[in-house]
Length: 310
Image 1 (cartoon, helix red, strand yellow):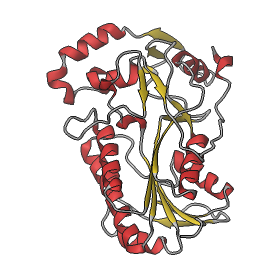
Image 2 (image 1 turned 60 degrees about the vertical axis):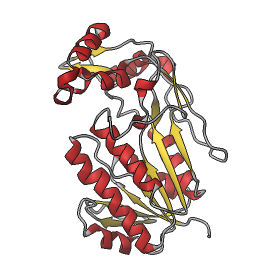
Image 3 (image 1 turned 30 degrees about the horizontal axis):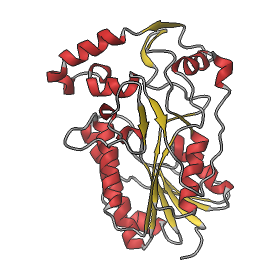
Image 4 (image 1 turned 30 degrees about the vertical axis):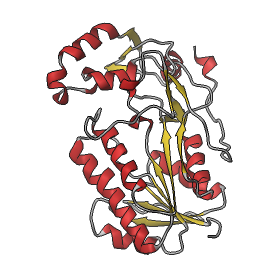
């Protein structure tokens, strides 16, 4: 087994995908970028247009994998219902696995999510850690976390020589700070939960570096990834306000919202996220985040000076 020199990246045109292509090139790797539309010419990058949701994508992927030593699988649905996630997240992963087996590629790095942890098992104010149980398909929190958990199961059972699962927190950069953990947006206003709670932020460049390093090392491990120093909700909101929104920040009556969510549990599947108790707990209830990096992985910390945004 030689060094990883050429890597195929699915979802290469997405937010994490673009950063991962950059990180792979910076590491001296050749990149096969799989996306729905062909990108602009770029030295070191071969673009392949593939729709991972269709079965015919397997043969196209096998051809694209010629000369590749590993795959970084990023493509997944970020929103939508269970059908949307089954079509892209689950079926897309099945097609990537099938193509890798045909092409004889032995390493897969999967971008999963912090959302696979079952936060109902974490006491209020306690720490979410590598040892926290995962959500199960029997009782999923939502369609997204269910699909990511299914992805992890698929790759763990695929029988590859090595698999890395990377579970990033809230992936962001200076232009992409909004996230559902901040609260509820309504017009010019943001209704926020406690401003002093830490948020599991993960800068996109840190995430991309982890994906590439894990692939280059053919790591057999799971990496749960957040920034070394986490900002509070109030600090992220203050930084977000520099863009002009929100104009008004108001406290969210979390106790009342929690009581309503508990009462509405019988009809929870038909309700918006923050009216479903498990989602509300994951996004807005206070908790700490403590994870360990595998040995041999050294990551950048490009996070901003949150202290200046108090």
